[in-house]
Every structure is written in structure tokens, then in C-alpha cells.
Length: 220
Length: 93
Image 1 (cartoon, helix red, strand yellow):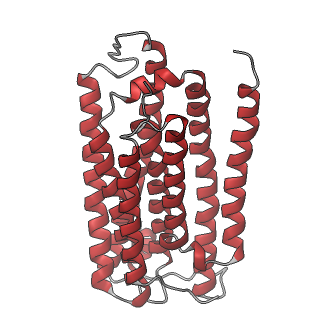
Image 2 (cartoon, rainbow over the protein chains, first blue to last red; image 1 turned 60 degrees about the horizontal axis):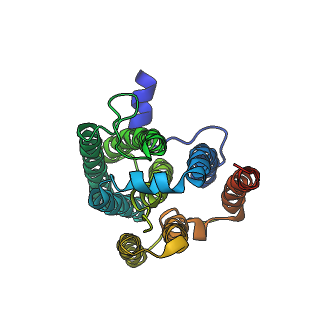
């Protein structure tokens, strides 16, 4: 416990690295490799979605009409703005702007919470609309089966994305505490950068989730 | 390699472009473009993703090793999609 407290409070150059710069490059490289595996995790889900949408294009388009398009668009803007805040915080860390670092991280948390709040409200609307497979799914018309699959994918993929958001919020909070304690300097700020990379990736996933679930156009 | 920081002007410009693309993708979905709707939506998403990777994630100023990981990740997702879809699309359902 004492040791983790120490890690929270000071810059650490691990013994296996020659200097902080080498440590920083290794840390960011490690995060990129992890994100490549995350890409394959979400990629597999997008692939499964693609296979079923290919099998039932009209059903998926019909189901998409039950989505809250405007909330989805606003949430996309909220998440993009949060990414901007992270970028600002990283910039602050790089140039030694402590205030900017703190504000950037704090606003990232605020925007992340706003995103999850909207997402939760949407889930509530789907519940009221009887669109939750396995719980209360009801669907009128010929596309009930395909629509059930659509909503199954919707909840699985946006749910996994929301879990990533929660993890990201936890990580950014730790960075905020460490920034507050004055750990980060122009030389040592790799943790902020690494967490930033993770946050941007979660944003990237949403950029693809938004059109494939909310914006399918029904052809007449 | 020394760390290179992305300026505030660049960050703000990227955010403006991202918000514009979000509006564009929403706007495009209001029209029935036939089979083009999905490709247009995905093309806009790819542009947004590229901006985030290049600038917010600093890939543009990262060394080649980072690019190996990015290209490998995208390449393997490509294999995943191409091989699976060639199978499904050539079946008589």
C-alpha cells in the first residue's frame, strides 16, 4: 500500500530504462500494441454485425428507425469534445501548463459522464419501448427476428463500449489526482499520454458505432 | 527521438473538422442515396478516425514502430472482414 501511494506521488524511472524519454516511448508503444488487440476485439463484433446485416438488410434498416438519432449525434459531439479535452491536457503536460492539464482532465471526466448519462437515458427509452432482447422485446411487423438481432448487437456493442468508457473515466480520474499532486512535469508525463491514447481509441470505436446503428437509411 | 507536441491551433482545427463531419454524416442520413448511404457514412467515419489517429493520438509525429502496429492492426481486421465476407457473400442463402 505504501508503495502504490509512492507511485501516485512522484515521477518514477524504472530501473530497466536508461532515461525517462526511453521509458515514455516504451510505454506509448505498449499502449499502441494493446489498442491493436482492442481493435480486433471490436473488429470481431463489427464483423458479426456485418454478416447478419448482410443477411437481413431490410430488417436492420427497419430496426434502426427505432433509434434516438439526435441523442446519438449529440453524444458523438460530446465524445469528440472529450477527446479534444484529453488532447489539450496532454499538450498542457508537455509544455508544463499545470492549470491546462488539470482543466483538460476535469472536463474530460465531465464530458465522459455526460455521454454515459445520455447513453443510460437511451437505454431507458429502449426499455420503455420494449426493445430489450431477453427482457421485454416486442416488435410489430415482419422484421421482428432481424430487429431482435439488431438490438442484441446494439446492446452488446454499445455496452462493451460503455464499459470501456467507465475504465477510461477511472484512469483519467487517477491522472487528475496525480496531476493535482504535481507529479507530472515537462519531462515526466507518459501516464497522461498513455491514458489519452486509450481515451481516443474509445472515441474511435464510437465514431463507427454511431453510423452503423443510428443512421441506417430505410429505402422505399 | 524528441517528443513533438501538437499545437493548440491544430487541436482546435481538428475538433472543428470532427464536429463538421459529425453534422455531415447526420445530414447525409436524411437522404435516400440508394446503396451509397452506408459507404458515405463509413467514409466519413474513416476520415474522422484518421484525424484522431494522426493528430490527437500524435501518430503523424510518431516513429515507424508505432506505424507498424497501426498498419498491422488495420491489416488483420482487413483479413478478418475480407476472408469472412468472401465466404458469406458467395453462399447461396
